[in-house]
Amino acid sequence: MVEAFFWGAIGAAALLVGALIAYFLNPSRQVIAVVMAIGTGLLIGSVSFELVDDALENQAVAGVAALVLVGAMVFTAGNWLLDRYGGSTRKDPTGAQSDASPLAIVLGSVLDGIPESFVLGLTVLQGGVSLALLVAIALSNLPEGMSSSSGLKRAGWSRRRVVLMWLAVIGVSAISAAAGYAVLGPAGARTGALIEAFAAGALLAMLADTLLPEAYKVEKVFTGPLVVIGFAISLGLSAA
Image (cartoon, rainbow, N blue to C red):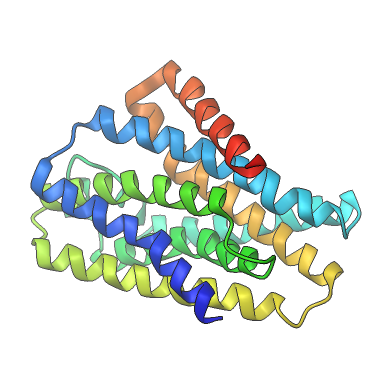
């Protein structure tokens, strides 16, 4: 469990790195969008190769598909609720967060980090952390931290306030990774497969709701090829 906690914190730490880059280097929206699209492809690949594929080894296709849908619905319900209070602007790099609830922004960022960190904790049980998933999470969190923090900076948030927010998200992500390890640890293979399918659905919904729209706003038709590049990288890492 300690190992899962550690890797959960490492994966989420890219959010803080992204925030510091935003405050000190002011990256362009195009750079952020490119990294975001590639990170999306990496995570889609990890969900396919690390979670769904493993779940299908111990559960029927219908059961896995059903839990993927349930996971997506649960994440979407939480995201919809937070969006009503301004959480939808949490990744906007233009400063739209100035009109939103700070609590909704923080909770939205926490919600984004829970599925991927939970999944990372699951992989530790399989003999060690998944390199492909860890890289995917870090590469998706980096532009998320840059984009969100760029907007928060324009909205008047101090660097200290943003750093504290991301530290809180990192803490929750680490706990989520440890929870993923703890929940699956005593479970049988079939139960573990259902948990993996649920987490996969939540993670896919998170990508579709938050990362892809922000990337498409900037890259437009080039978003697709960039996502595929990330997917191909994930395939290579999984095969290594």
